[in-house]
Length: 126
Image (cartoon, rainbow, N blue to C red):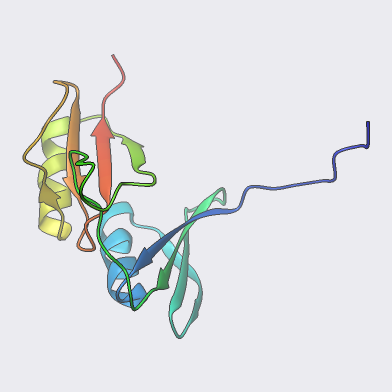
């Protein structure tokens, strides 16, 4: 077997109609800093380093539907964000520009939609 080359997972990339607008939302939500910005692309990183979140502009972007509907655009991924205070974090997310999703599958999770329609979950460890 060939040795595996060194690989480092550096970011999750979300498509959006406007990369700068969606990146600004995640900056407000997470408090992360911009590490790289160019037309149609923004990379955010957490304080102290680690895996980042990038956003790229996609003019033909179609938002996913939550909960899933086989006749609609499917969610390809979602972000899980652990929080200490679910109600407080949910209020913060809404103040930052998120919408609380109509379908909530669990008591210890709050599903929100970012301004481009990507679902993300706030959750508390039980």
